[in-house]
Image 1 (cartoon, rainbow, N blue to C red):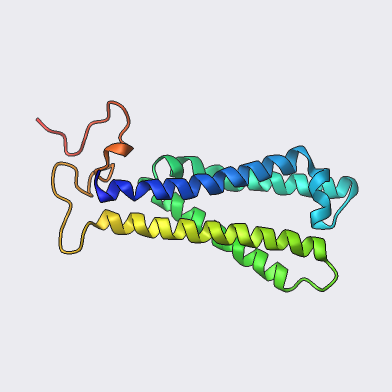
Image 2 (cartoon, one colour):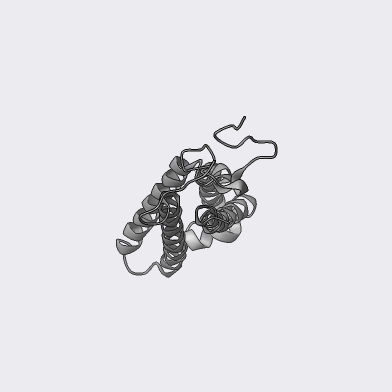
Length: 172
């Protein structure tokens, strides 16, 4: 298997792990908001509505993931959007945590969990995106030769082909 194709799998893995954690968190917030409200130092109906709303926002945020997991190179602009979203989340969570006054232990613990997870996801996705881009460029001093070079729609990776999809350029 070519190095360009191998680089897609770590990207898919990083995206899929973050996606699965985000969606599971979102569904938990939507289904059982009262269980998570204390971590945000809110309670009652308003607290449940707030936590449920955060869950819905998480679901909205993750709409871009499935296409990117399926074809990270083809949808690299979505991949970049996901990385930017992750950076915005990480920056905002860090800022909120740093400006939190003393005496909010539960809220701080929630903030630390979000920062730790989003920081790890950001690094994993950024590194795998960079590796995917470096692999696409090919080895130093060389170029991707053959019937499926980097200019082909699938980047020359059979693992990204759909059943029955023709290779580029068409032969014959």
